Every structure is written in C-alpha cells, then in structure tokens.
Image (tube, rainbow, N blue to C red):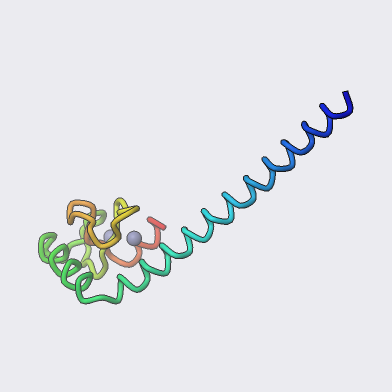
Length: 101
Ligand SMILES: [Zn+2]
Ligand SMILES: [Zn+2]
C-alpha cells in the first residue's frame, strides 16, 4: 500500500514539473515572437506593406474616417510573422488605434 502512495506522489510531482516546464517554454516562445515582431516592424518589408495598406484605404481611418497615419493588425500571423495578407491590416488614426489595444 505504501508503494502505491509513493508512486502516486512521484507521478503527481512529475506532472507538476512537466507543467512548469511547458509554461516556461510557452513564455519563452511568446517573448521570442514578440521580439521578432518588433524587428519586423522596423523592416523595409513592413514599411512597404504599410504603405500599400494606407494607399488602399486612401489614408482614411477605417473606423472613424479621419486621416490615418498607422496600420492596425486585425489578426496576427502566428507562425509566419511577416506573411500576413494585407486583408488582415487596416489603416487607422492614432486615437482609434489606442482604443483597439
Ligand atoms: Zn479613427
Ligand atoms: Zn494595432
């Protein structure tokens, strides 16, 4: 009977360790993605895409109709950052953009 309890405790302990490591890995991935995204926003590829979106929307905020100076992501490409289709992007003014985040 005692062996049973020891085994149960070991299994629970291993499970906890596994969960801790899984959470840590997830956090690490999240940070790596965020850093990658920050770099991407500085790239020429992003600047070009941004320009295309603003031009498509005629520099008009797609929420209030004011002059747009920024581009907002409706969705983020989780695994292929930088490959988001321009349909996922909208032109937006600063006040509306602040409200979106
Ligand atoms: Zn607006
Ligand atoms: Zn945004």
